Image 1 (cartoon, rainbow, N blue to C red):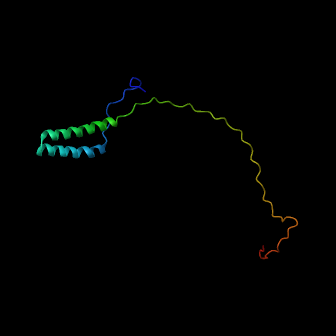
Image 2: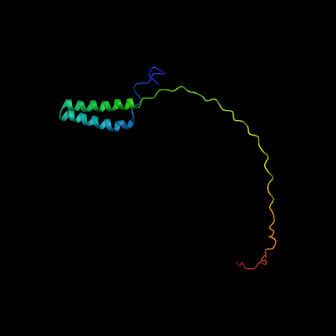
Amino acid sequence: MSRREGAPRRMFGPIDPYCLLAVLPMLLVAGMVAALVSVPVGLVVAVFAGLIVVFDSWANRPGPVAPVRHPRPQLRPVAARRPRPPAARPVPYRPRPGVRQPAPGAPYRR
């Protein structure tokens, strides 16, 4: 999407609070350098800290708002239900013909 299409994008967004963890100590150092060493060097450090805040605000700008498209609901065909087969009845145990069965309570032999 080009800049000419859609709503215009804002130039800057909110400042990330974690950006201030880098900028505030830099401003403290810039003030100490300006007071103790050299004012121009302190100003350079302060300008660099300001550029970090501007870049962070630029990086956090909101993206272009896409138009909302609501998808049409797809109608699913209703499948015909087949009747369930009747539940199987338990079959009592019957020994196979011709197989000798041990007497009830007799130990198992191989």
